[in-house]
Length: 119
Image (cartoon, rainbow, N blue to C red; front, top):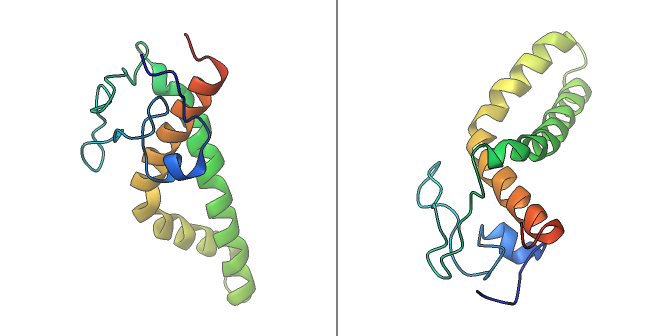
């Protein structure tokens, strides 16, 4: 087992790397996650439903983006009704959903390894 952990290192998280070794890619495709780290062999999913906690991080990443877009839309288009701005922002957000999915899992993985390194 690798002794140096890379939890909460911004560069490691931005590059979507393993929290254990900091080198292996967590994803093998746009939405497909590796079962184990290709470099150190660390198993990413600790148990059934493990990444359910990533939903909280997804919410924490996505909602501020949508809120900022809504405020910006209301500022740029003050004559538009708020509900139409909100609909437009939701549709504009959809292309970012895969990135939010990936980064929510990456951040959750790093968060979990930091607070429960042996679990």
